[in-house]
Every structure is written in C-alpha cells, then in structure tokens.
Length: 136
Figure 1 (cartoon, one colour):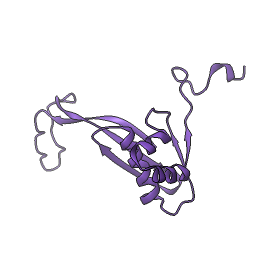
Figure 2 (cartoon, helix red, strand yellow):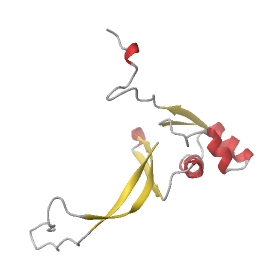
Figure 3 (cartoon, one colour):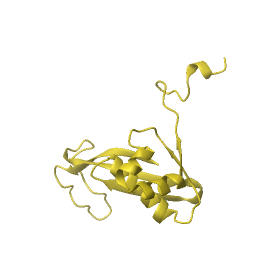
C-alpha cells in the first residue's frame, strides 16, 4: 500500500487538434499549466496476482486511511483469514486510526484481520539500511 499527494493540472491553452497522420500539436515541450488543486492517491498492489486498486481522495487523514483498510478487508479480501499490509511508516498508518473511524467492535475486527508490516525508514540519501550494519 502506498499513498502520495498529487497535483492536479490543466493546460493553460487547449492543444491544437491533430491533423490526419500527425500527433496533437502543442506550443512547446514546456507548455504552461494551470494548477487545479491537489488530491491524495491511495494505491493497493498485489503483484503476484496482477491486481491493483487506485483511489484518489481530496485529502489524506486517519479516517481516510481507515476507510481504505475497511474496503480492502471487507470488499477486496472478504474471505481472507489474514491480510499482510506492507506500507511506509506514516503517522496515519496506525491501528488507532481504525478506532478513531469506527466503533470499537468493528475496529478490533479489522485490526485482527490486518497484520501490519512497515518498510524500514530511510537512513540517508540512497540508503536502504544503517551504515553500521553493512559488512566491510
């Protein structure tokens, strides 16, 4: 699971329509754009199954993340005994978010079915593990 903010853009001027045998014509490679706001994109991926789900929401809050977890467990994997979530260590990615969004019984049921695994924190530019753990 991953999420990221995304900037919504539109062309400042509409591109010229394509002529037969030619691509759409734009002013230049560096056309001007108009900012049309932002959104947060939630991406769920299961590579071995060839499955993904992408959803854009207007914001990224604990409640939004909890709603995504509920959809994953009750719609995408309703019959799974357990689901292992691999995600970054973000402040909204906590079991407490489930309890903030749902009644205690429902939050407990969701938390019981979701095993949480986080990626390791980055320790520097281009680093995947602490320098002290690297063999010399």
